[in-house]
Amino acid sequence: MKKILFTLGFIAVSIGVFAQDGGSAMNKAVNKVVHSNDFLMIQLAYDGWSGKPDSVRTGLNRGFNVALMYDFPFKKSKMSLAPGLGVSTSGVYLKDHYMDIQGKLNANQATFPSTTNKKNKIATTYIEIPVELRYRSVPDNANKGFKAAVGVKIGALVDAHTKEKYVGANGDKNIDKDQNRGFFNPWRFSGTARVGYGNFSLFGAYSINTLLKDNNNNNVDIRPYQIGICLSGL
Image (cartoon, rainbow, N blue to C red; front, side, top):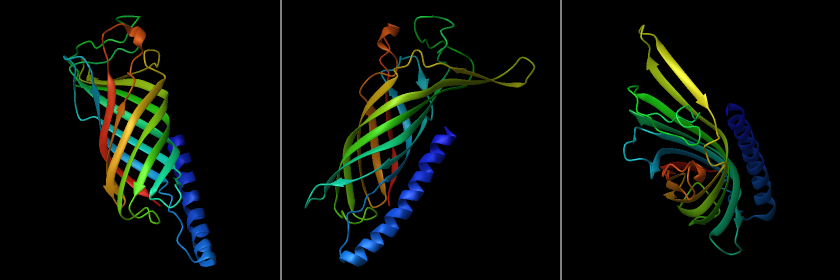
């Protein structure tokens, strides 16, 4: 995960330096302002599960997304189409339950047994291809003006694990970590929207398909969603 984020960060810095140098040279030569790319997006989110079992409660769930986007502006318009590549991580914290993703209690489906342990985390990581239809009131400067966008994201699951923290009989602190993608859908399709001003905006994302595979047969229709703040520009 750290290697993925480092690689995306390196690419972002490289493109930013190239864009600034190239943009300055072009402005001097042509004497006009070019369309700004708005290619870097960093998002901090609250993550939730719609359709989870009624008995399962969640805590202060957190998500982090980063994506590199590139604008293809429509001619003589403030609209553009922007595809990209990104990483999305999510941490959902369960209260009084944990998620059995190893099939210890039921080999055919993921279950949510009750527990006295208070810290039970489910973490997922996706490599994503986001696509946005964008509007910017100042198309030649991505750091200014009103922004709005709607889009979709296609994500490939690369990691799914649970982490359970508890105190043992001797008072020692223990951590159990299970990793298994078998019960999860390998692909995630999400609708997205964001609106803001300048470098900051509010965003939301909702998964169109379910978190778990349909063959679980456990009547659980969990669809993850995110609500948060987005930092974009350059």
